Image (cartoon, rainbow, N blue to C red; front, top):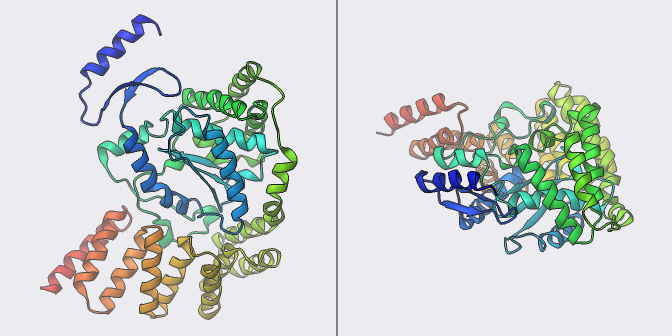
Amino acid sequence: MHKRILLPLALLCFTALLPTLQSCSVNPVTGKQELSWVDENWERKIGEQHYGQQQQAGGGPYVIDPDLTLYVQSIGKKLAQYSKRSHLPYDFVVLNDSTPNAWALPGGKIAIHRGLLVELKDEAELAAVLAHEIVHADARHTAQSQEVGSLISVGQMAASVLLSSSGYSNQALQQGIAYTGLYGQTRYSRGRELEADLYGMQYMSAAGYDPKAAVSLQETFVRLSKGRSADAFSTLFASHPPSQSRVAANEQTAWGLPSGGDRGKARFQQEISKLMRRKPAYDLSDKAKKAIGEKKYAEAIALADKAIRIEANEGEFYEVKGFAQSKLNRSSDALKSLDKAVALNNQYYAPILRRGILRYELKSYQSAEQDLQASLALAPTQIALIKLGEIAEEQNDCAKASQYYQKAAQAGRENQQQLQQKVLALRSSCR
């Protein structure tokens, strides 16, 4: 680095006495001097703290095919051993969401959506995606993003919007998971994206993969960003914007790396074969969600039934069906569908929460409370807290109701004023 650049940076490191600033340090991946806002212990803590909730925000773990997750984990761990901080507690998960996306949390917590897996051509492209995300964690991109810096100074942020695909969510569930930030939508700078490409290609080459897969992957993304699939990829493109300059940079990087690495096409296609067989069912489910958004509930039920005929063991399809049935006031049928959804996947908050809300509407308060508490254990949503408060009111427990409404008001900006008024009214009546 040029001396005229080093000196101002050194002065900045010496004089910047912000409360949250730890020190100036050498980036473990790039070897460059940089401001270090957080230490590794903080990264690990933040990653662990938000990993489960972030998975819930992304559709929950893909439980129907545990072998697929094991496969992705094997590729991720193979790549992680070549990272500069291979001692980080790297973990990899496949999420049950059609949105093509992948993300990394501080400390090495990494996820890929099934919607992105079906767009990849071979194992080397999967390695390119995972290596790119590994670098974001390895080089502290996620930990030192502008969003994380804001978290340090302002604390807990507003609730994230969940289940919003194609209008599928209702107003209640749109209030979302209340937690500190949505790391999966972190917007990286052009420089950090290029760094993640560069060092990710080095990691995948060291692991024996053809680095040219990172070129073909970016070429696909550039094409999709200009074509009809752009809407589907909007989340991925917002956080990892593709460009022809990235394609060119990756081509240049590939020239400097050993050629002839593994592409693993046949192996990859075998590993995702079950997912590809289910893809038509997920497409039908996505259409059903869109139909719900358009208030075409009977059509949504018919589409969900078609999806179930293709794959009877996917809880999402029963959840979609149950939600549509509830909108037609077919409460008994809806409850059966949601029972099935929860039985098939009790690791995802949404069907449990929907069943809890339905049970509340049916005045089955004890079972509703059990569901709402179970959903909170997976994802702290404002609506669950509100419904628990309403149950407490029905049971004339104004002190307990007040506590739930207070927590709900703190969980997000939605309904905040009304909730605070409820708390004040309850406090008066409790005296």
